Amino acid sequence: MGSQQILLVVVGVVIVGVMIAVGLFMFRDQAAATARDSISNDLVALATGSQKYYRRPSTFGGGGNSFGGLTMSKLTTRGSNANGDYALSPDPVPPGTTMITITGTGLETGNDGSTPVKLTMTVMADSILLVMNN
Image 1 (cartoon, rainbow, N blue to C red):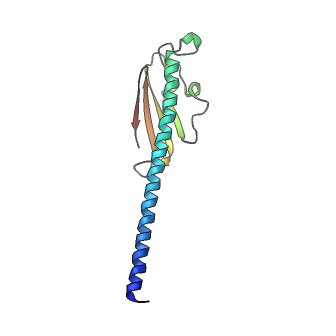
Image 2 (image 1 turned 180 degrees about the horizontal axis):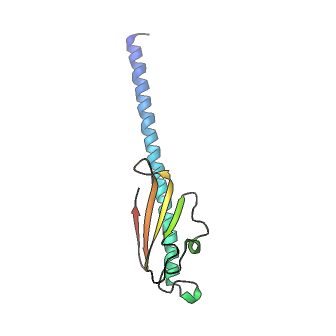
């Protein structure tokens, strides 16, 4: 083989290596974004259930305009699923509480490259606030 042919092979190997690395980074970013979307959807469903509990009269098993008495087990039968783990804070919710926090921790690695995707949803009687922690 001539030196020109060896140079072409080396350049080809370098280009293929760079393309593989770029593909891996794109896949990892997409996996984290998908995890965030899935956790966000789950948190919205849990927040909706929380607001439903808030509005339901206490005589019918609700909070009677309070999140008091709400537990994670009243929102869902499982605190985790294929998307991640979910936690209610405080759990159980004390009487008279008008704001709760639900945290979702995913299985994929987040933006920092070392800890899992994590989203926090603050639920009030008439609104929700979603914060992406990682």
